[in-house]
Each structure stands twice: as structure tokens, then as C-alpha cells.
Image (tube, rainbow, N blue to C red):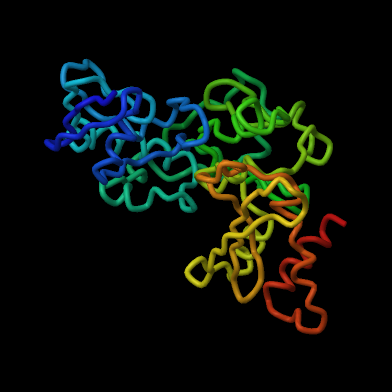
Length: 316
């Protein structure tokens, strides 16, 4: 059964039960999303996808609101643009969005988080904070979630200065994908953060290093160690990378891999969301076990090899 709706003046018919976001994409109308991904249940926390529905008192999240027959939707009204601008400004004033895909949207809506004042400097580890205990703000700087990068293994890092608490990593680690439950939200209010149990290092936690949390992170708060080290060395260049789809060679399940290759070196491995076996998820072997492919002997002399060898040796 189909449902007929009008989006920005364009009539469209979609399957009953579809979301407004899905209906928008039917007519090629992209909407900004941060906490949404097709393989996880929407949690409605980022609010950048809100749209205006005729007759509704409030703006509604397009990622989770189901369409209704006769619904009239506006995705670019002044009310929608203002709301999205404010949400992006609030997020950008407290977290580092430089590695997210929000730059075009921030430019479109004229986002200027600097009007809240200069960003406060890095804090100590936020996991050391006690809920409800805050220094009194001076009103001169914008409070941020800046903190040191957590580097405790050779596979991926946690840069929570970019975390916007979208919950996708928690979902991917939990019952919607891995069922490991190694991470969860700790703290309250502005001190809420993603943490392992008792803030233990990942190597001492329940983490199985599948990297599924990295795969869904929208801001770079979770990042492949290879990408992190190459960015620090100034040699990470997505424009020069090719992506090749293949099948994992470790077992007979048939997981599909996307090999991201730069200078003839695999620099990271992801998995396509639309694959019926993986749905974007992999195990530790599929996502990180590619070193054997690039044992090039005397040919391994590129800057990429040197950076990756140094990263691995840090955790030997």
C-alpha cells in the first residue's frame, strides 16, 4: 500500500511505513543527518534532520517520523533553516566537527559558532569528572568537550573532542549489531560522554575490536589508527584514494569489504551498508586483518608504511 505526500510542493507516493527522510530521498531531496544510519534504529538525538509538517505544532525528525497520507512537508522553510542552524551552531561550539560531513550544510545555513565566544581549551580526561560537579562558568568562553585523544591500541583511537553523543557507537556495540556492550553513556548533562565500564582502557574492556563503532561514527570521534596517524603526518588524502569492493578471505561467510587504497597501500577497510550479509558490520579480522596483504619486503618504503609501522610498534 502506498501513501501520497507533498514535499516542498512536489507530490510523491511511497510505501506505507516509510519515513519522511526516505520519502525525501525518493525525489532526490537530501536532508542533513548525524545520528541516523540506515542499519540502526533512529534515536532522534541530533535534531538536524527536522522538517516542518503542516498542522504539526513542532518540527519533527524526518529520520523517524512515518509518512501519513496527505501530509504536507516543508524541508526548507525559515523555521527549519533557523532550527538547523542553531543545532549545528550548538554542536560546533562544543565539539570539533571538522572531520564530519556537515561542512556544506553549515555553509548553507550560515553557521557561526564563534558568536558564542572563543572555545575553552582542552580539559583533562572527562571520565574523571563527577556528575553535578562543575566549575562556575565565566561567560567569556564556550564550554567544549575538548580532551586528550585516547590512544590505547593499534587498531583505532577515540577522539571524544569530536563526540556529539549520537549514540550510534553504543547501538553498534550493543544489541543492534555486535552484542558486546563494551561502551555506554556515562555521566549526566554536559558531562555525559561515551565510556567503557569504569573507564578502563579498551584493551582491558569487553571490546572485541570489531570496529563497528568506528564504521558508524559521523564525526571522526572514533577513527582508524591508520587514518589518525596519517592525518597527523599530513599524508592522509581521500582525493587520492580508491575504494575497491571485495570478499573477505578469512572464512566462508562471505562478508563484503571496501578496501580504501592510497599509494597502493590499504589504509582502512569498511563494509557496504547495503550488503545482505554484513550490513556494514565486520569482525576484527575482516576490518583490521589486512597487514599480510602488504608485506612488500624491500618495496615497503613509502611514507605510509613508515607511519603505519610506527603506529603498530607503539602497542607491541
